Length: 85
Image (cartoon, rainbow, N blue to C red; front, side):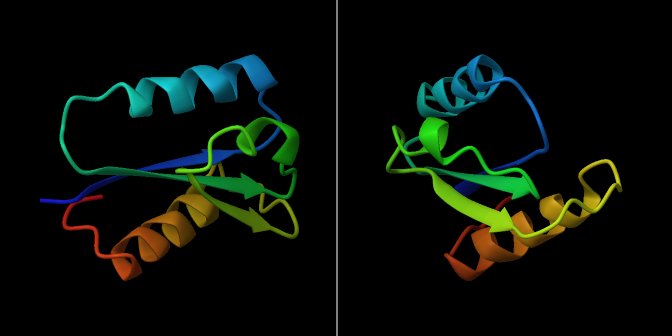
């Protein structure tokens, strides 16, 4: 079973994003995919260091508490074959 973790982010500090990506990478499930979705403020300098993470950059912030990026991330994960999001 392929599990996907979707993380929407807006203007979180780089250390928070690294901690999040490290946490997902440390999971013991054999097939975990991580999708980071930037809501108008991508941090490529941070996510670039994690080549296994699927990064989606939305061009503008939506101001809906992460709902739009979370939905986009879920659709991306499902299209990549995730069984559970």
